[in-house]
Amino acid sequence: MMSLGQILILWIIINFTTSETDLRNLPSVRLAVLAPDDDSLPFSLHKILPAVLYAVRTLLRQGGRPMEVLYRDTQCSSTYGPLAAFSLYEAGLADILLGPLCPYVLAPVARYSSVWGLPILTAGGQNDNFDHKEPHYRLLTRMNGSYSQIGTIVLQVLAKFNWKVVALLFHNYEDRTRGNSNCYFTLGAVFTALGKKSFHRGFDESSPNTDYFKLLKEVSLHSRSKYIFSSSLLEFSY
Picture 1 (cartoon, rainbow, N blue to C red):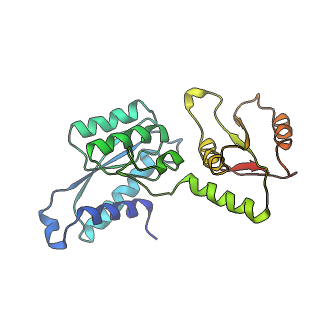
Picture 2 (cartoon, rainbow, N blue to C red):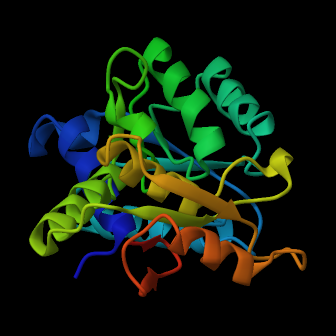
């Protein structure tokens, strides 16, 4: 099975290649990888780059177009991430952007890429905000789908069992400087699919002050079941 890196690079090769006979005369495709240099994150540079480099070398051995891989640390920051992309664009060092994966970095970089004419591929961007390609995200390609698809699945499950009243319970950061969590964005798509009318409550799972008994009791008053279903990505009661 091909790795995600290989799939992404193969997509690039197909779109930048004209014919096999022309490959030797074409300049290298400059692929700029944008990711945080933080190994506590599942998508750090140290974890992504080996797969990307391996895919590039493998495809080159198979006769693919030469590629040059550059990378920049986004720090998962909505400030420093876009600045890293700016530096690549201003220096004319990138033909295509791979990443970013942090949503608060991806949003501005994807908007700029449309103006710059630089295609951008990412395994992130599942937030339903990115579902609308026009006018800001025209050149954005998401490889992992969208949270809005989860909203569609939840609607189908509810319809299957004829569940009408839904309450949403999700983890979100108490420290607002951190933005919103993946749980927030996931259930945000579910909330939208449900017509933005469902009862919902957020809590910080890392906070020692979270009163789970109070939360569950409050949610139980706005839903129709004694059961609560939860996972690291999707938490809701009905």
